[in-house]
Image 1 (tube, rainbow, N blue to C red):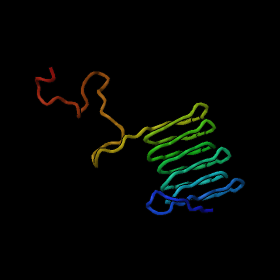
Image 2 (cartoon, rainbow, N blue to C red):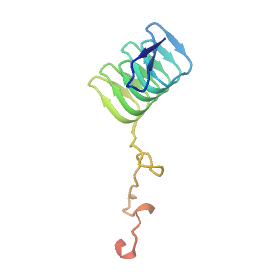
Image 3 (spheres, rainbow, N blue to C red):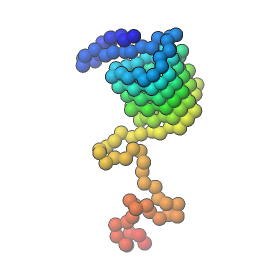
Image 4 (cartoon, one colour):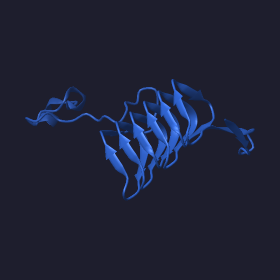
Length: 150
């Protein structure tokens, strides 16, 4: 089911709904928002926001611009901007996002990778050079002159 809502002046926004008691198997792809109150078995690729209601469940990978989870997700969450795990959320899988907000009571079992906003085409995703354990500099930290190395 798709519901049209008022947008922010850029045109109407669409919310696709998987209602309570509904099971959807396969890939769900949308440029708008998706609200899951039922069960999705498969991959979600959403250009907008994914909302998982307390009674909702997703079994599969979720790729979205933002997400608000109150229900259960079994699979990886790849969220471009902001991921909110509400107190009733249960997540089993890895998370990759720029901003993570967890309410007290939310459960998360997996690994989390926090990404930085890219500064340009040469920016690396959140990885900085680290000195070697023996104190020597990695190649990107090599001093410019021999005097600096002493």
